[in-house]
Length: 395
Image 1 (cartoon, rainbow, N blue to C red):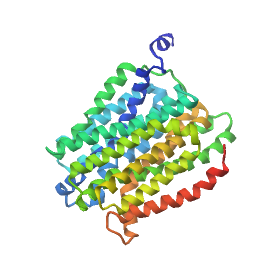
Image 2: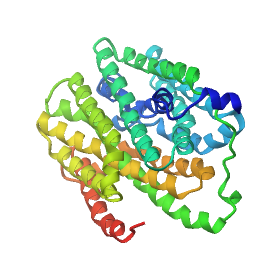
Image 3: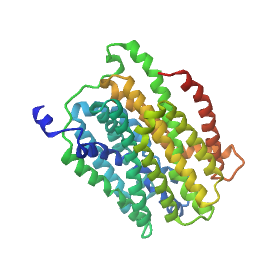
Image 4: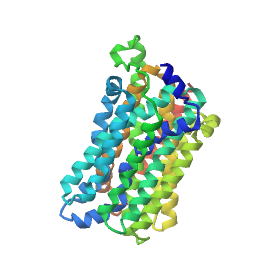
């Protein structure tokens, strides 16, 4: 413990960076979205919805594995579990570069999701343990910002490598090995701290009171991440179908989304300081407005505005949810609570293509656009329903 205390100071910029750097990897699964049209041409005999899931299916195993990540961290150490997750993402991410079989590519994406599940909730739990109060809120906002930074790096690299071959695009996941190297060199093993199950908590009634809000927040997270996936999965199709540009243009649009999402993440702490819980309603409204505008966008500048609005949404509403839970549950239960919220996030991301396809069948609009519009209307309704709840619950 003495050696640990001497080697580590969570307040320094360098150590803050490498705590946050793990989050660079978490959202990169969707970074291959620009190659989806190319995959559709190569594997044209497969359903389009199935091909679209190549960019999101990794969230299904991530959803399952993250439920066990806290227990694995208790047994083997949080550093080893995060390091293993990053290594899995690196290997599984690059593997499709040398594979021509669709189902093997699909399987590698599932394996990639195992790596995400090992790192996702633990990246948040580290912040919950090290920081408190406004510092914690700012670090959670920074963590939210780091996710789109990683996605932005992968998106740009994928877009550039796509000019050579869609196979080469998967080499962008070499970023995982760079993150692994820095994290392993700088971050020490965290002191062992038991993560209890709900039945092990001393006050089960208190957990019961907290459990429903956590589940409610997980549902909100899932609904919000559907909108985020819409940007990553459907932007290439909108750009090409409306003749706004090439796949590279689509990659730049997605990059604009990630950059503005990143900026809002960094600003979360400041905005939250002034408007407090209303930041949640603001985030929901921006998602609704962005989705409705994306549905009707026929020109490039309108699409860019739409994805920027959607990019503002999750860093506001989603980070508020995680920050609220972090301040309500005991620190020893933070891993469990974060895992439940992330189940919602991963479920929303994984099911987004199927959900939008379902919405498409319920709307008279174009095959790609109609479902996005219906999602926007549902988000607008959710904003209206949530407003009186937020107004009523001051604490």
